[in-house]
Length: 236
Image 1 (cartoon, one colour):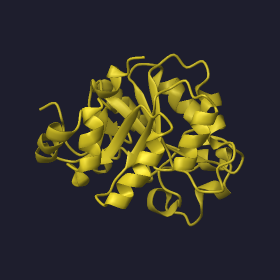
Image 2: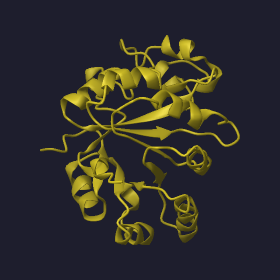
Image 3: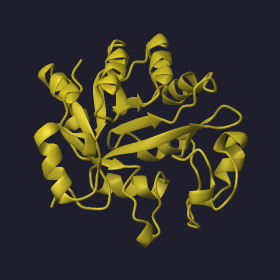
């Protein structure tokens, strides 16, 4: 199956957000802005106390919601009542995000997992995605999440989010690839490296993260097939 759409357009990191304009990461407004630029959307996924996939990056609520506490200690309803950055945007469920995006642009979802605390996480996300007709890919740093997706026969492309320059790190990445992954998303500051160079020779799609200016984009263009970006216009 061809996954060429994964690298066809720049990927807006946590949506097309700009906090100076009151548009915060992983919000429906940031996704609307990404759609208006015809950018693929990258978003993060956390798991609520009642087993609902929520679109949110951090494990704690203080940075974006000004509250103490763990995301996983609150229900989806409680999280949905919180405002992000003092804006009008709330923390959305994955189902809400899918309804808003409505297949208009591709979506790359990153699971923010926790070892020994993710029972049902992968399955809940796949349930939310069931029936969605748009282009979707799933990825994670967490090998246990990748194993769960593999065990569930995930019908979407699955990728490894990764970083590092040490040989032992590359060995760990290779172990994840044994699951038959479809792409890799790698830290821009760690490119180039022997692991990624070897994967490119195998025609593995490589996405870089997080590219924040045109100089980094030019660097990424030498060693990866597409960028995950924020803070600048990659089309200029």
